[in-house]
Image 1 (tube, one colour):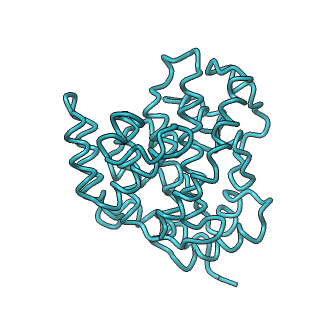
Image 2: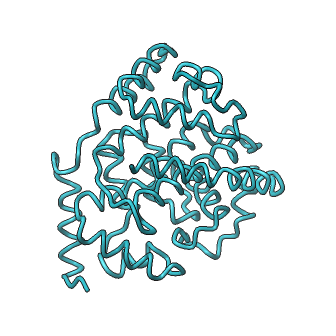
Length: 294
């Protein structure tokens, strides 16, 4: 059993997060993609060129575009086709940026909090966020692509934890795997005094990603949050609840899921249809995550 001072550990971790140069810098490819995202007249050729610079990233985008839910399969034989015919500019860019960003963060592949399970859940959550966003009637509350990007980055706190403190993270991974019904966040707080949502928020801020993502990551377990960009927090909470992952239970059981959906103008029947659509993709998301971890 790992024995250490919880208060000292959490203080040291927070100190590292607040020091310039201690957190891994935003990878070069991810930085170029973010710059492209912020360029109003960015075009398909520029994005294709950036993705093709990284063979593993290009292979991932092709595999994602060939998922059965899109109906194209192996007819998609180029990054250009994957973007223009299937994913669209923004989805391809956001997917690429999240994958490129994770490359600088080391994490064990296996266990409930291993890279395979984390990415599989991340893909499911981000995709469901996007589906739910599209069926919202109160569309002025949320930018769908930012919601998708928030879903893609909401687990990055785990990646940074594992990267900076591999021994301690391995212990946490074992604990969460051993007690599957236990809330993972509560275990983090009890054992380490710091949680992945706080860690992830610092990382998002250091990497200068949009404010909506930083707030969503920080407040993801508190759908009763009512501050700035609260709609993104609620949408992420709804997606994670519908995915029914016990390790991702949020801290507001008294807030009914239907109430959250009503606040965003999401119809319950349409939400269930979106849930079933993503459930139908789970094996493919798992395969993508396994190949990403290889």
